[in-house]
Image 1 (cartoon, rainbow, N blue to C red):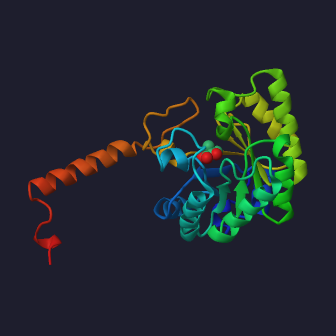
Image 2: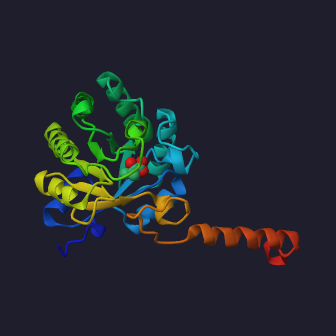
Image 3: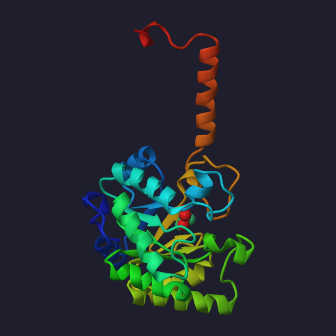
Length: 273
Ligand code: KIV
């Protein structure tokens, strides 16, 4: 581990992320979807902010990530970008905006970059979306891949259980990671796969590999902000470490406020004009 901490660097870039992998400094990544949260997480020193399509779940209350639209992703991304001074901002291209049509993929990526001011996009899949990845990269837009449990394909999988436990799926995942690297992706997210496989991928490819439910032997970690803050309480997979219980903190604050309003303890004289 280097003594040269990334916290002293002004603005995170793909180049800096690559250097962090090379010197063994782990990359921290969290999701954010709005200005206020992004401002706090950026100031705390996070390396990458992902404007994930998990916004579909935690911001909009949908069961899956599929319904969120490109316009909605751009709205969330532009709110995040306005808050950020140091972090590298990556935006998910939503379901239906890049699969199977590389021209549409390019158009979607360009809209995200132009209209939100983000720094990169993320797409789910390997060989099957290669053409789209290459097309986006050809426009100079950095691309992050996403393999393993890819929530946009949840109806194909039928379940949110661990992926690539069988040899054939593990071999395809490793091949897909190599393809994404060869295409020019700057990093890959691996979601919910065996730790040994994730380690192998991180050792095989030269680009940073960021895990979520993929063990500790990768180049960095990502969590969904609402899950790690304990705002969402119903989602508790094994990989999730909850760093706060904000649902309790917020409920207490709301209850105290309601009580103060009802009992006329708020506002008092010093809170009035
Ligand atoms: O949308 C998202 O939040 C993600 C992370 C789970 C990696 O893709």
